[in-house]
Image (cartoon, rainbow, N blue to C red; front, side, top):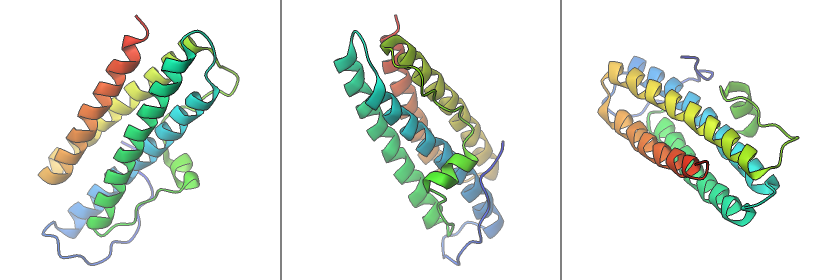
Length: 165
């Protein structure tokens, strides 16, 4: 799994070995980059969606953006708690994200629902990979955090897919 740029850890008293914390921070920063990118792409969809069903989908995208913004905050705070630096600027996230760019030339409700659905599904998959990587480190608190993100992401995916059938 690609990881975001590593930064030097500060000395904290949490009882997790430094090498493990470095690996956890790298995994979390990668997820942070993907989360921030996903948040911004959902906002892009929210601002620009057009067509039949506009109001409901416009509101859905706004609600989803709030969910992913909350996940970003949780991930960034865990990075800081582990003694790392959360790499969360727009440019940092853009440089590290694994999600494809959101197109600027689409606007239709069904197209946007499919585009956002595909990105949320890719994010869900990468989050499960992050859970597996953290499980190998054997750090249950970070694994639990990522599991919480996974549950919430799956729910958002369900909401998107429910509009497509």
